Image (cartoon, rainbow, N blue to C red; front, side, top):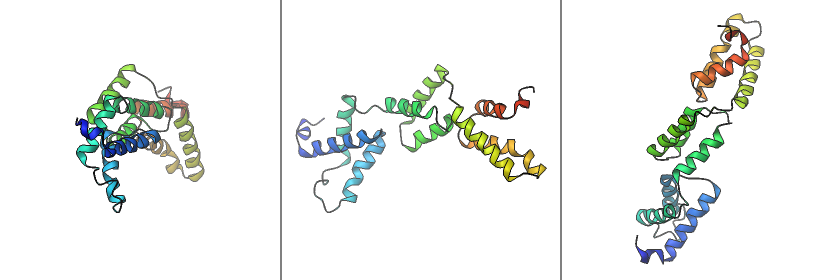
Length: 183
């Protein structure tokens, strides 16, 4: 790390800009780099962003990592904890992590640790949503026996699209279809 660069106004500006972004939400290193490097494009008439180069931004990110202000593993763990009682399953959460450009090895590490702990999803929220969806289908297809017989499959598909695995889907559907329990 160049100590001369740390003493410049550019370092201070990049540093404060990244902290400003992190104060609002957690970002991956790649996403922070992208956001800060795009500033000169958005404010092309401003000279402030002239020295916002890749190497300068990466240097600031390294300093923030050393200080513990950027930690992708912590960010991913928080994201996972917030999502546990939500309406998305593990696959969908993983997809979101990739979309937010977190490093693959960090995503794998956090998800592996989660699965080792064997923490169960709180399925209350998605169960309520699925129950409402079932009622909507029943109301919509009232009198059509063929369509009514397809509702369970559609609910299975709905939950699959939300990122839930077969085990969680069956747990939710068993609440709605008690006759599944005796099979």
